[in-house]
Image (cartoon, rainbow, N blue to C red; front, top):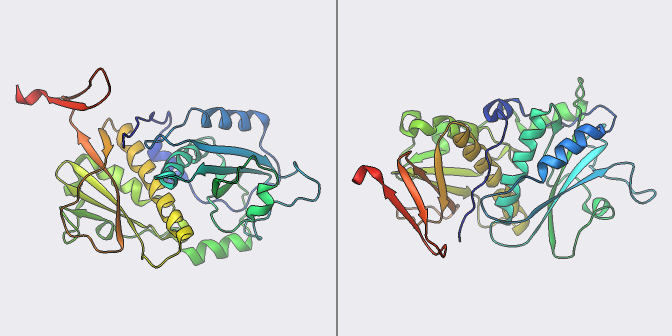
Length: 307
């Protein structure tokens, strides 16, 4: 598979990542036309490294068929606007959704809007009645979006406490060096320490953080961590979460002037059955030049240090 280049976000990525929180209590008012148009115009500029079409639809609560309720099972208060995400079922579809839509969420955070990923606690049937959706579309998630309320609801306080939303797994349980037997130190990460730290802060369903990264030479290998016994829908959500973490890592790296490319690699160290290899990131030095031949059939790298 040939992976695609993506644009660097035109915002302070580190600031947006640290500022972003899952918002479940909103002011009871719709987005202004200016904010909605700004957000959706920016959405149309977004892509993902997998070259997959990810569709984002804006839905307003008071539109659509009469008596249709956009249900979130009481987990969200005050939201009038929602973003619904669909994608065709193909390899890397969930990673593409996670990567591309998280970039939109970071931009929304830059706009001082509140957001939250919802993958389970909403009624798909309610939303599908007011969406443009085909029978072969995957509809993995929605995102309420609006102006955060200054006062959190009791349900939000309970949800944040039960999920441990502020907590993140420690560095040494997520990042490894040359294989899973050797935890990676921050010094081992080199120039990519901040990119990995921003990955560590990425949101995930139930705050499970189902990812692991192994640095091997000039490569970072990304794995999705889950038991094979979970159902297919849960596996999709785990891979979506990994896509979110890839957004944080890649966009932070680019914002720091670091360059690299995504590739599929052979893994030669021992991997447990619950670690599922997904993709690798290859670091490139400033004096590495990438050439594409006239028929785009191969990539050739010339290292100027070899001359």
